[in-house]
Length: 188
Image (cartoon, rainbow, N blue to C red; front, side):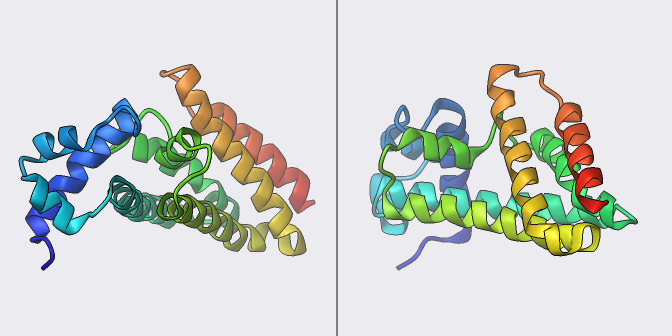
């Protein structure tokens, strides 16, 4: 028997809030149960392990991120603008209620020396999803060099997210201008 949608939402909201603000290792399942207002039996019926709960929270977060990125891309009128819209999306996502001080996927990867398969799969899906999306958006700008440009932009995006830990007031402007330089150099 699965969870009711409202119960599942409460559990995932609690898990996201606690895992991605306090840290995964620092958050016991009992804290998620208390925050969600559910019984242990209810939580474990839907998520038999902390790792499966974390993977579900990451999957849901990836969906929210893609929606934010899609909206940012849709606002742009040219190929270069659509490619660089990832930086608009980073700022937009940061301002959303579920936004956080940095990337939940980087946080999850950093917390495990040897991540459980469920977590490794979620992190890999996010990385490959970003890479694939950047390649698709880079093709009209960089042609045959789209993969090369996408890989560089992925590094800039990851660096921007990491800077949010070092400087909480960090703004995306430096990353965006760095990316624009890379785009200009690659599209020549």
